[in-house]
Amino acid sequence: MIGNRGLFAPAAGLVLVLTTGFFAVQDAVGRDEGSLARSALTVIAPAAAGGGWDLAAREFQQATRTESIVNSVQVVNVPGAGGTIGLGQLQQLEADPTTVMITGAAMVGGVEMGGSSARLSDVTPIARLTDDYEVIAVPAHSPWETLDDFLDDWRENPDIPVGGGSAGSPDHLVAGQLAEAAELDPSELHYTPHAGGGELTLSLLSDAHGTVQIGVSGFNDFRDLIEGDRLRALAVVAPERLEGVDVPTTSELGYPSVDLVNWRGVVAAPGVSDEEQAELLEITEEMYQAQTWQDAIERNRWEPSWAGPEEFAGFLSEEETRIRTLMVDLGLIDEA
Image (tube, rainbow, N blue to C red; front, top):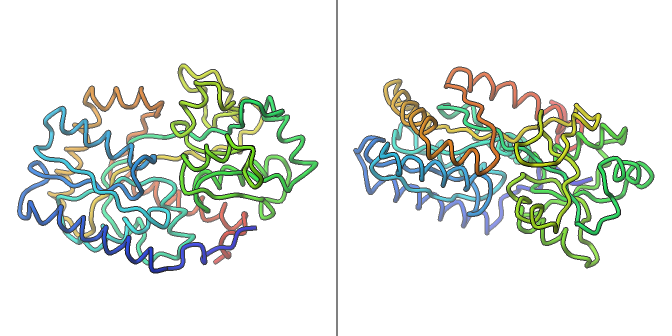
């Protein structure tokens, strides 16, 4: 079993990331000090370039630029600690109306894992945008042709490791749900965390000792390798099959309780006025309805899941409770 809060204990490297990222955000805001969000907007991607949060931030940037919704839009990457470094920096930009951040389910888990003082309830909700579905995959040469093939072996040998992203991420939580569905003790799950989808795919494609032979990640992390027949998708964690993707869902395979969805949303700094929140909502609504964003949804196999500020705030509260309960079941955090 993986240890809990120690995984995100501050270290020298983390402090460097925090400091560097904070100055990057401050510089980005400072260059356009006094301008409204329509003139210049900074979008924080609370992860390194190339991941799901970064992809959503870049698509947001592209849509607002292409559709001339905002004059100048830039993305600032602030990686670290399951997104909580970025969350902490947004919290420090109190009342700044020209900065937003992409958030998602992984940040809820990151807050719980790291004991972060910053929480999503501290910032200003703008909108929920999309659902980004998880996929369970194995190398193309794997003897596991179906999800049931794997589960049969897993029941016989619960020590089989399952790979995914950081501890407490949606990948990890899906693996825990899968263990429960297989009637295994989720607290005994042998989960192998990776820095991102790229590192995980390298492990899946390697035969070296210590690599994993089954992994959970966002569909876009595995997409090219699945389409290139280098990985075999056993199941997608979604209520319905993804359009154009011939892979069964966990529900249709008889495991409806494996249902965690990795969503994406937009939040702003705490303390913005009602008028400033309304302007950021208007910008986000225009972006969401634009053809450029609709093309991004189709291209990335996202599912539209719009919710405005009040509904989004209620959803965040429910999601915090749900994810915390699952993390307690996994033994990642102590029950309050």
